[in-house]
Length: 302
Length: 92
Image (cartoon, rainbow over all chains, first blue to last red; front, side, top):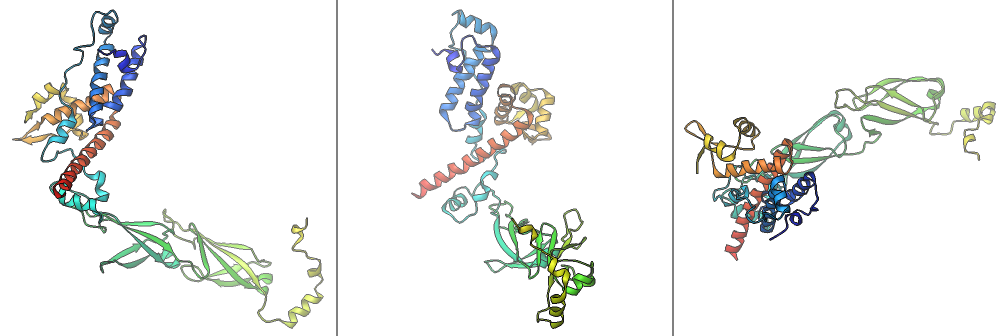
């Protein structure tokens, strides 16, 4: 005969609350339907529920404490557990669910081979997802495109690239993966997109960055110049007195956002001297007093 | 064995409304025969499991759905595993 207090792991003086808590803790671990196949858990669960049946009833508990009854016979007969039905039915059970391993049902290993042969009667599994990798051009990512993937088996797959796609984004093409098992659905094709770098555009999030060379005269005097954007060239005013590093923002000329708005293009000016030495410019610089007083490195002095 | 709704309510000790709610949640999926819903012994055991979860184990309604789904997956896996082992043995 076992002491029900010991079975539940509580003190003899434990409050009803503590007893219920102890029982729940054990029941969560030991309930046979949460441990199908674990005979020991089932036996322990029976003992634990018998002990709880005795100790949760104040009258019976008092009688037991006074030694008037023992715990024999306290075990209440109960119908069979759900697991007994779930595992016996020869034809599979309506509640049974195979989605938990659908992912390895169609790989090429021994296990899936066995799954197909051994369990062909009931297995209905979703096909495997297949991963592809698709590099696209910078501008295709900005404006969107349709790309054709040629698959290892020679079939082709048209992939619609939505405008504004991000580097590393994965497109899911429903039903374009491996076929399912039985009448299971086919898996998906997962296409990971890599955006190739552009010759002069760069991108961060939905903003496009461009280093734009301007001449000395355009920088000093200001000018209206033509600037490339991903969607074509636009006119932009370089303000008088611009410098290398000046950033001008072209609103809405960046990449499409999810909400339908666009990012900006940020144009960073780079003042360029003429490629060939220019005698007139040299002569000017030599006699230019303001240039001698100007110290662009003053912030670097310690 | 096929059990009528009335008998099911008695044997599973359930209120009519509770049963309707559980069927609505798809915790129980009764069969049908001649326009009447029917139940099996497995449904009774399953109802007992749901009662255990809710009363003894203190699981709330959301938790019951999650647990049943996982339990059903475990049984699906156990079945395939059983067949797999059988197949392995027959090939050995």
